[in-house]
Amino acid sequence: MPGSEKGYLLYGGTSIPDQCDESVNQKRTPRHDLGPLILGIGVTLSLAIIFFAPASKNALAGLSYITKPGPRTLAERVDRILEATPLIDGHNDLAILIRFLYNNHIYNANFTTPFEEGGLAQHVDIPRLRAGKNGGAFWSAFVPCPKDAADFSDANYADSVAFTYTQIDMLTRLRALYPAVFSAPGTSHTALSSYKSGLLISPLGIEGLHQIGNTPSNLRHYHALGARYATLTHNCHNIYADAALLELPSGGLEVAPPKWGGVSAAGRELVAEMNRLGMIVDLAHVSHGTMRDVLGAKEGWGGSQAPVIFSHSSAYTICPHPRNVPDDVLRLMRANGGVVMVNFSPDFVSCVASSDPSSSGLPSFYPQNSTLEHVVTHILHIGNLIGFDHVGLGSDFDGIESTPRGLEDVSKFPGLVAELLRSGVSDEDAGKVVGGNILRVWAEVERVAARLQKSGVRALEDSLPNLRRAV
Picture (cartoon, rainbow, N blue to C red):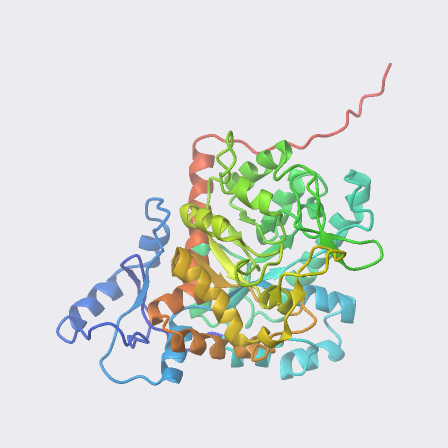
């Protein structure tokens, strides 16, 4: 949860005034003589300068802090970073845990007591959110792929659509039950004000376009209800894009053979609709071909017009799993202006190429590297390759059965930030990683949407059957 005192955020040189002018950045030269001038400038500039400035891919790229002179311990630096910048988790699966354990019944004491007082199963409850100085999360309204994932019919997706609405409804009711904890989904413009008032920034996300049932109108309804990103696939192909993995009828996963070779013609239209709508395109779970298509690597299509995210994916070079992001795609992400939010799932953090030719094509788990430190190795690889403007955190808490050592739940985020600093990441870059980058991308996606709508781009209409009876 956000603290009561926060520093001055500086995005691209523009400050956001707040209550504390202390810094976590020891590497900057102290500017004792300029302090009053800088502080004066900071308190006179408003959030509107940042979020309503002319569109620029790097408008929110820089994050720094106004400093007071004086020594800082590592713990103090971590505290200041997490007070100055909301830590926004790109993917939290609390909702599916509540569905699984409580059948979405959130008013009974068997849920409310451990959620309020601590001890809820798995990784998330209010005391641990506060202990971990969480600033917000994209709460996933996840729905599994249908059993017959090869059937792309509207009828086969009907249950997925209904299930999605129940999950969004439950998350909406949870927010209403705890109005002093969760913000409304809001926009990038309201996110920081929600954080400053002590709320968790709480947009929603959907995890796979099977959840829209081949119907763009459902995508728009989900956006109206608070979904701010849509993952193009889960562990199943759909009419829009190829997935990285397929769920087997007998259980387990295998590397997915391509269906479309990336993004289909319908998928191109839907990505354009997401750009128009202001829905962030999420490339977690998609095939490498889909990643490259959306990022403009295929001749004949420029891909997404707005920055995209990987809400919970890690670095393929460090762990060669199909769910992770190869270096060539990382370079495309730098050009796109997006952010890769590193996943904590041990399967995607710690693996080695399999030597078993009869395997499913997936790498072998390597438990020795299932650690907080190895998660940081992924962050460092991405940051060093394409810049720390393009990396974030996407834990997958409550959606994974086990966690790396040192990252057992949402209370452990400060330890991750401390390890970033110990590894030589500057306080400024650590602030970008924990939340500055995703706020920048979210704002830019909204600016692209406003531009497209102003230019007259209209909504993508549904392809519907003809109801007229044949004569």
